[in-house]
Length: 136
Image (cartoon, rainbow, N blue to C red; front, side):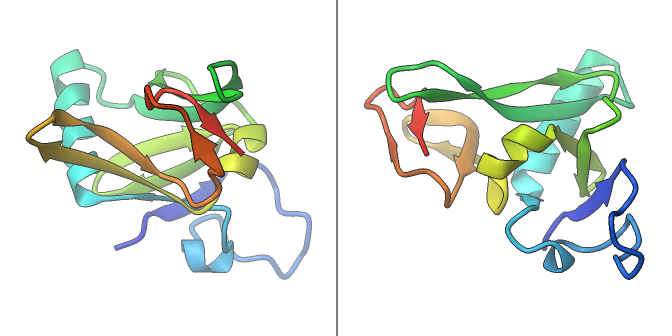
């Protein structure tokens, strides 16, 4: 199931879909949130006690291959944020980061090596051995 995309800025074209358009209407510029990721976000949000908080994902310069991911709580949204919702949780992305994150799937995985959020990002050209840094 794909997350629904909702923009917080007005559309540039009059024939554009309504703000609650599905990712199919904005190919490559959406973020998919898996059910496993949503469950973990909801669990941590409830533990934190901030029912309206969203997770902010983004990109910042740095790391051994050029960029690193941002993953933090967003208690307040910025006017330019794009909001993606699925399974009762919200993920927000700033427009500059969305250039690099469009088409990404946010997942939560459990395995023998531990557990954590996984960015399945088709835009990544390479990553470092530590797994904390990516190249576009």
